[in-house]
Image (cartoon, rainbow, N blue to C red):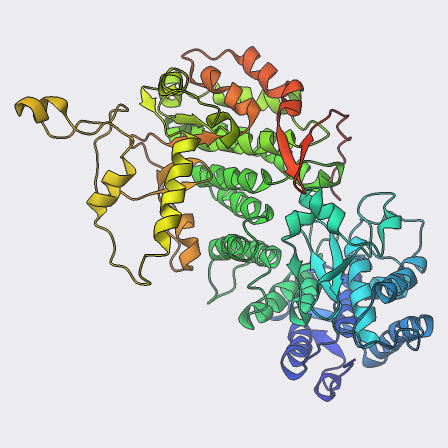
Length: 622
């Protein structure tokens, strides 16, 4: 336990943002164990005084060069800090847990101490209940607050192996010598109190988004400080924020960013991006850089298992009129979501995707008719819905209903048949079906789209095996392949040589592809989750961020290629490419509950066949 550093004491009474930032910096730079309880109390005191018990107006606060904060006195902070330490130490007999590392029994005991002292007569998910200040003044904590309090309590007891683990909508703890043990310490939704103390393995095995397939953000101490800051809520009404709290959060996030503690924290990068969008800081990178850095973090450290980095980015692009790029980001969000099976615990991401599908996408198409002339935008739309349909396939509860179908039908019906026809649609087939002996003739008959014979999964599998066999022989720094060879290799499945030229010398040596475009040898393309389009700035994220170069809207002739994975969307292929859309048939196919049972996913090596259930009622977020 660190407590107050000598340099901290001289900062009181705290009346400015710079004073709070200084204490955070002292704790992060001058201590190997920044004190979580102390920092949470300080931030909570400021947030609650400016949002829950505000006694002066925004105009008065804005009159200062630096917003003036209500004073936070040293004696008050010390008293609350001492109270928290006393609660934990008086309830936990350390002689019983005479070990160097925390045990499951110890973690459960600290969790019980926090849980049993909470007030029961309040709505646990309302705002401003995430800090230890809220716990110590009113015995109220939200689910994140409980998990954080358990980690802070273990730090008080000297067990520094206990750390916070977070998905995009849940929190638990890891502990033990190597941090390999996990334990539930809070709840999610209603009626899950009995899970406290249990490992999170069943949640991970369920393929629920709530547990991000084991790709949670596992914090060290500095990252736990970042969770304190990222959890700050500046809102004091449904439509207004306390600007002082927002500025405090922004300054603290930049401190943590500069110290390198947000690198593996996509959610915090997204929060900082939104703050910068609202009030840019002079000399700092633009907000779009932060959103793309959040995407890069999720891809690099969490196997692209996080959805919110893409919805953050998509929201920004939508608000700034970059509608095609917004559609691409939302399609990327659905690609991340397709890794999961929908469950009743995933209500927050369900509402997020429903808003995108039923409000943002329709408004985007209405506001920017230029999108309707771009085949790639139609492909983005299909990829978005394909991800959601695949999310539904392994679930016990259907996701898509007529409320999803109507906006989709209305949107795709706005694309002319000639635009839709330019999108080359492949249908993914699993290995088992392809190895059953489908003949070339059968494949040719069933897998045509605009006279383009697409690569089958079998061929792709063979290609991947060949690539893997060659990878070990590739030198560390090979010379780049000539772009012409790259293009020819990429087009090896196409008919590109002119037969008349070879036999008689007539015409050109190469023929145009069936879609009418000419072969451009230097062209570089990317293939992300089933769609091939000209490369964009997102494709270079894995190589690090430099200048952001967003893809501009264009009318250029394109023939994007998309692979559909979900049973529902594969069943829609012919309908989507028809000259005249049968909107009723599209709606029926999209909402067909029988399709949910067709989809199978594996959990823990066992095949699971979905069953049907009732969709939970929607509740709006606070």
